[in-house]
Image (cartoon, rainbow, N blue to C red; front, side):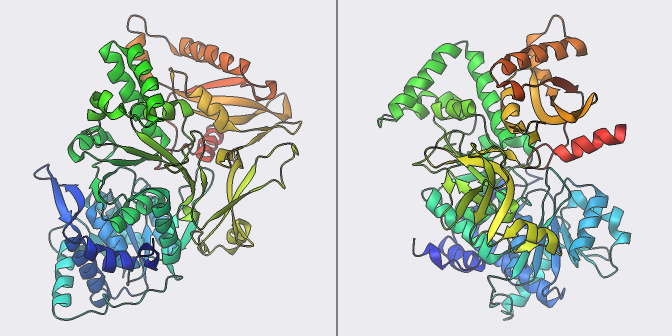
Length: 577
């Protein structure tokens, strides 16, 4: 572990790690013309980062400025991020799914002087260009040549290499202040407006370092990058940790290409969110059903899992056909962003996949706790990461017999504060502790269990707390339901009382497969789902019972990590009235 502890800044990844792995393949990225995955070695990554950093300093005069980056996952996106934070200025990663007016808002809030964008975002950038400062610098990632409108990314890298070749090492030799503000991330929060999170090299290195303590050496493995790079979970755990270990990162073309790209990249490791894990589980279920031997396979899975606990692990051989659906090499599934149904975890583990779960937030760079190979208790998020602390604040808990409270975190991974918002910073950071806004408790084994968010809790008139996420897990098991959101709707007859309401979207694929002769109408679908909810209610204490069902026709509004934006959903209701 001593060698890894010298990582004081992300620049150490470039200057120490990349030299060690210079001949290894760092990235696999699909060429849009040949439709083949091309290999990019660590030696080229280092050269391109140093070149872009040099030209940004010497030609574009961006020293200490804020530089935004937006676009689909790509090698150029990674190079931009690393070049900026390792000697130029402050990187501002933006969500590519945001509309033009919100991108304009974030560019203005961040006071960015430059934006690096993929060619797919060109029209959106042109839409807001006239409203941006006249001296704004535009760099297009996939452009061939510079022109009066914008710079070509590749042309700038070429110029930067020429500067380095002539002896310009100002960027390469730049010293890094590990505690300085270097990353500005706007949260895509599920409850309110985006906050600007300020991170330093110290924060991100603490997060990267802790990964070495969680899992064995992952450098010989191939990752598939599926989640958006602007999200801390993906960039910190896949890109920063992966490249610090010398891993190969296959860049997925997009969510609809996941299955296809898995077969081509053949990854060992996949970082995902619950929605993606659930889709993967459904894919396995369909493959098993198609064999006509579902009961035999399920029994074999349970038996194989039992044998694995005494050192006889034949699961990957027994379920090779299932493994082949995901490229044949997939071993490790890491999941964050929200809890995953325990039944799904048990099922995936029975087929030979190692499932690990973590809990984190952008403000923690992002990891706060995680399960490990020695402590993989389904339904929990393990213990605090190396160098971090967690405690449960029970001070606002009206139920004195309960051990459930707000989760607080402390450590070098915790943010510097919110950008230009002292009030929110003081509310979130108190005596070194970060108040996450998430609710949970420690179980008898000392593992953290997440029950929900403070802003989502439904408090009944007699002071009982109902955690929507707990009910949503049960509702999502109903085959007819695609997704659900539980909230407290005001009772029109008694304004002081809340009606526990379930809002769901329908699994149309399930209906098409199981109701081929007579497709149920809206009222029948509502009744079918309500019958299942009544069964759930019988398993709950009375005050948690779901009293109302709403069936949505359109999709839920979501973050890029596929979490439902409750606040936005309920605001949409108000606008309709």
